[in-house]
Image (cartoon, rainbow, N blue to C red; front, top):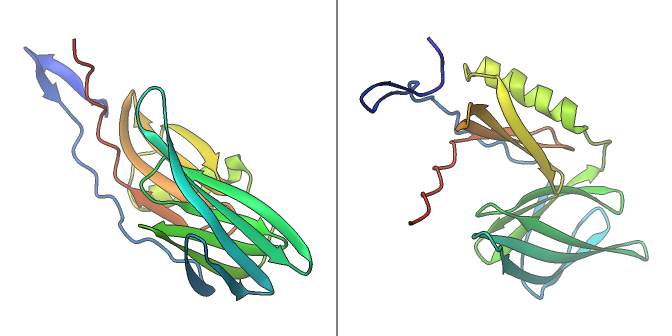
Length: 191
């Protein structure tokens, strides 16, 4: 029997059974520092971070993109980073002047976790393979997929035809993997 939802008789839909999506979300290990917009703090490993600005931009087709502007300073060098997300909250991993930092958001604050020396990141194919192996271990169907990178995190969606079954994320530096339920389908446009 195919895994995709199909119409079998007079509009009755034969859909695949719901999946059990793992809910554990691994946390990066390291020193955690919380900042509000406009604050500057030392976050460990000789790095100072300024949370310069946050905002959002509306997209033409609907929705919005949130962005966070940060300045990292270490040993007389500085690096300006603009992190963005289409999700409700940001999860980013980046090499900040040789130090691996994980940036997460929760409302109006950001949390910077300094992990240590930045390792070499995974490439897209390696990251997708690790997600698929973890999905198989959890009994999730693996087949069609789409994925893309956003600020050091690969965002993966498992597809069955045009139906999203489950989503996952993997940090390219930390190799942390977490799973998410599928996004609800977009509402049909009004006629």
